[in-house]
Image 1 (cartoon, rainbow, N blue to C red):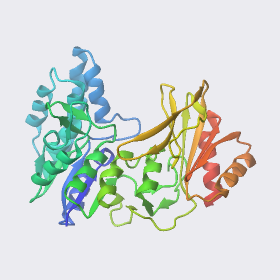
Image 2: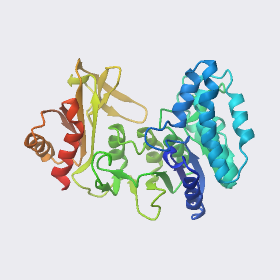
Image 3: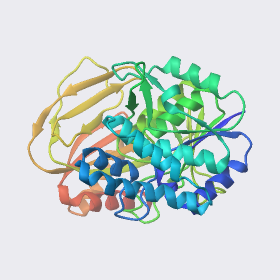
Length: 396
């Protein structure tokens, strides 16, 4: 049996965290494949390594070295914690970035994390560009990728950087931000893993953001379909596209915290048991909001709003592994707040939610209540207050 363990950037920012990760891996011999992200924020307001590398690529030549020194220091500090000399690795990485394109430069965070993790742990390094393959149009070649991975990891322990691969011409290709989750899911699928563990700084999915509501209710178990809805709505624990590879093979996903590894997290399974009425509450401010629904021939399994900063908003009516069905709508040019609630399909959820908001005199408009998803427009400056109000009504 094999367990694939992915470790996010938030738990790679300090040497003591790496020490916890090494202990977690050592405690289960089935954890023989690890996926690591680039180093994340060390404290509130800090820059992630990936953001620094984006700045590095866009910077003028005389500014690049200063930015790189910030990146290099993160990895030098980790290496120093373990008494590892990583100077040549870091310098060689910097030299390799000269004249390279955006994707190559931005991928070096995951590359450095995996190379350094290999040096510290003794796990064999896997080069993601050799195994995660795309065509020249940046479409993932799933079958080829899984075969290459399967052939590469038959025996031993391995670590690989997430977030990137390469096309058939050898050019680096990036997943979306947070794409290390997808890398881990592809590895889990390729080796028919029993479990895909996603280790982070929070102990699973919570009904809402702990930064908005203190100690919110944790969700013990979700189905793959429920996970896709929550991830699409902005629950940032797991990338929405990471669901498909593990769902195809019916691989259990376990979302856990390295700080509380002895506690159960959130399990993602094919069919979750009956859960609480409210699964997730998210909110965001949008510059322009889709408010008019048009008819479409596509069957509306789940209605999901995709609100983009550019102002183009679309109602996503149905999503499968290979296809998406969209319905365009009229844009309203004003700032607004969008509250999204994933629920168990109980009809009175919308009525109770609107009652709670009205009681607190929060102006709102019901946009959609379909397929276990409730969408409500509110004033842009009342998003957090609305989340607290809805949570309090259902859970306190």
